[in-house]
Length: 213
Image (cartoon, rainbow, N blue to C red; front, side, top):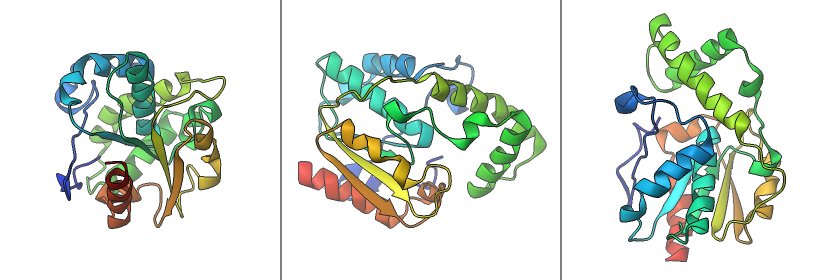
């Protein structure tokens, strides 16, 4: 999903986290819940947290970063300067999203659209191979149920997109209940605009990380 992103944004290094059950980790079992994924990262990441850092995630990929921040705080470990959440509702307002209610055939059609956006030929074989993983990812999203807002001791930047029909910006108001330092940014583009790392999105990272340095 981040193949078109730069390695650096000014002095900010982009470090990608690859969850299990995909690409080079395809033989590993799916993490099943965001809590389990975050717990594994709490064990793995501390050696890399010796410098200022932040988390970014889009749609379902935003929530693991939120849960990871929550677990880092509980463990007394270094916290991100900021958590950037794109096209996602606050945990206590979810699970939310059109894809959560689609059947396998409908999800296969959605996969074809995603692959096309990524510049990949959506063959039947590739869609079949990816469908199980998508279903598992969506199940993890459905399992992440938070009864009431929890507090994160770090800033949040909630990013929406003008033409996003999946997660409209007005659905993201709950993030201000999660952090005392919550800022909203509405950018040009649709739900998949983040894929090619638009300059406006990169500017949001530089703006907030520079101001928190």
